[in-house]
Image 1 (tube, rainbow, N blue to C red):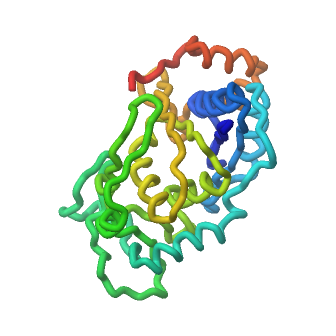
Image 2 (image 1 turned 120 degrees about the horizontal axis):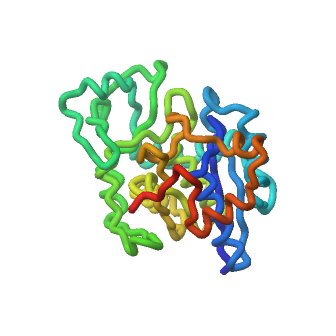
Length: 279
């Protein structure tokens, strides 16, 4: 079967070279095997997503010489799919309401730590709070792992990986201000779009443990994963919107050649001031 890949940016800011790397690798993997390259806009965060960023993303990808197959998919138009998935987990007794704030969690002396920082200490697990008050939905990770048993997934670089979702704790599947979290939405969407190969940065490697669990719980297929090394800026930290990474749009508007940039990224000849992380 020819592969189907996707690039799925959030329109909460402008793309940078790290995004370009993910898009190029996903595009090239599909094209090399006669497959499909999809574009999905992850605009489920209604408070931060901006229409102007969507337009810029499309312009940036075309500037890089990348074309996608089929219409652009928007997560904001797919909310019933996420609600249906959450309903299945609720019916199975695998999620619970959580009224805690980030400050509550940060202040908890009992909060353990995992690969992505402080884990939720389970304060609301079994708590009878007011359903009318704003709340998130968290997965009862221990109960979910008992349901699925041992799981594994394959990474193109690291090989076979034993899934360890417990290391991320009871993650949020639906936020107080959004109908689904990244974990739930991306898992449902990748299956619905029949994505066979997921290409993304190594910063999302740990999240795959949760995604593999959700695939098992919801009866969804498991794609092949390709986690690539991150691009670093001149200060040695990974490129990020919130840290002011140079935007592709600025390069484009300055008259730089996007196709030449894509060619350089493919060959490893990184632009001045950029480096690739060792892992």
